[in-house]
Image: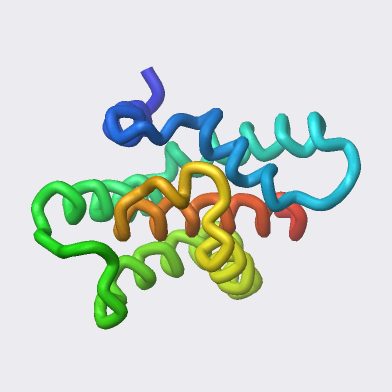
Length: 137
């Protein structure tokens, strides 16, 4: 069993699958070799789903959705953005911040269906992974 499988199981219980995250990421991808990029992105996502810091931040978003009452996505709520930014920058550095806001404003794929903490956490995860993929290790 992979270390990150508990978090992935919790995400899946909210309708967030690895395939859904891949589809969402690829929705804004512009370029060639889509299948190759998707496979490399999948491997990168799996790697970061095993990272203790990414898992902790994703768990924070999951717990906030379950235990923190908020109506909609109020403009004065910034904790959700901070979680997404933290995940994006942790994985992809400062460049991922721009990618995070691109995904956050466009809300492709599953992002448009998720509640406030999860849409930003997953958006940050996708943005960080996409940035890391194209920046290289």
